[in-house]
Image 1: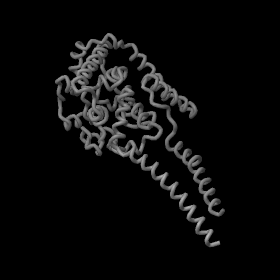
Image 2: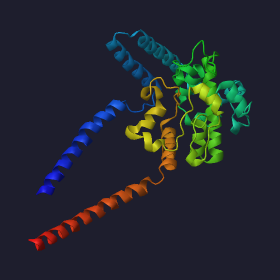
Image 3: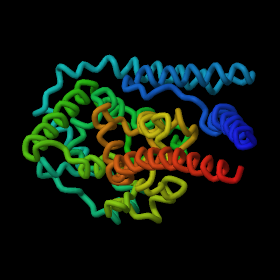
Length: 325
């Protein structure tokens, strides 16, 4: 009877910890945020509207209202660009201007400078664009070409006094549609030639400009000293990120919109399509938690073992006490 009372107390305290204290602590440390939204127009306006509500409650909403108005105007302008009229051949001519910073290896356009020089010039190595038309959302590409700071959500970091390395495109809107059509054409050629986009290639194009993943022996393309100056600190290695941070779809939310999860972070919005984002998270899981299935299976076996052991221990205890009495 004494053992049952002790067991009941342990169960009660564990329940209080599990259903009471732990959820509260998690809520305070990781406030609930909406799921990743791949309609970037809606994502930006929804977040800006939410920030405005919070600012109004504090009695200082001028900055938040300005931000909301800017995002509405920006995405309204992006909507006016008709991608269905994009001409890939014309886009190839305009894309030549991109080659001043970017390589397009699959189209035979090499980088104009090596990684060290690029890092010193821009703070971070500009990405190769061979897969850009396939892995990034079309509207995001339009937005990125038109106004990189707004698209990447880095207006808190860059401005007139500190210009962003990639300049806005001041040409005709039809030119942007042509460039996107060209990038999509190049990406289709890459996919055909390589039978898809591998996890490693996707990580290289989307993440490796800033991040390491040492478990797979992949290291940032950029010079670490220059990268730290550009970002404010060196971005973390992602080897264990899947095990440390992916509760409540944290990584999906972070990649989709860093400002929603870490307001004020220097990490830019990546702009990946949903399937590309899932591929990145899956790759991080494969590299950083390759034993997940085996670990979960062992956990089940362990619980079964202790359950059976508990039965035999109880029977043995009863036998011993019967003999004593």
